[in-house]
Length: 110
Image (cartoon, rainbow, N blue to C red; front, top):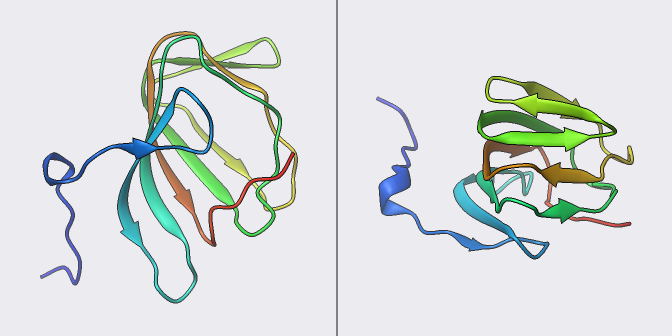
């Protein structure tokens, strides 16, 4: 049996770090501060370029279209942003839902 189980239908969306972005925390690692979240970007939302100074970010797009630097990423795309590496801006062309893992605390700087 799994030590931890989360059912999305029993969780709720919370305001994310940017307007138009909501988070659903599925798991938080009490040792590292890392989190596994569902992220929902409202269509038309732009997240400015930013850095995660305390965590690597792994993202899998579950639905929607996301544009970065003229390239559109769709459902089924995986990407990885190492800690301290500037990435973005991200533009949600449609509503986007992603499964995102931060292996350390979710902090953001410009």
